[in-house]
Image (cartoon, rainbow, N blue to C red; front, side, top):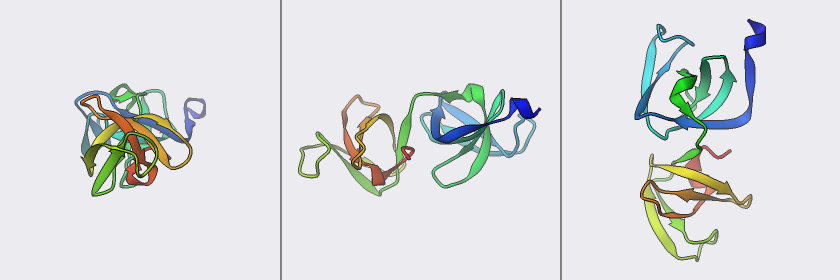
Length: 137
């Protein structure tokens, strides 16, 4: 059994692949169901088993999810009440769109200086401050 368990690298993220997925309190579909999470929800991978992954959500809650319910496509979720997405990674840059708290955005790149390039489900892209989202670090 020890060979089947491995810790995920620090700060590895995945997202919910289907329209929704169930989070459990143990690595089994017979375990207690804790939450239902929606598509694109970013989850930090903490421990990986063959068919199950222990994850942490943006609130810090730990739970288990079936590996088959996850996608490697990265998303972040907005934690600020309202966040601006700009044309460039610069505060005076043109505003592309505004996004409300708890909205998931596709993670495209981290420029390493406090901004993340993101894409909205509608296809619009731009830069958001890294401290206004969860799922990047």
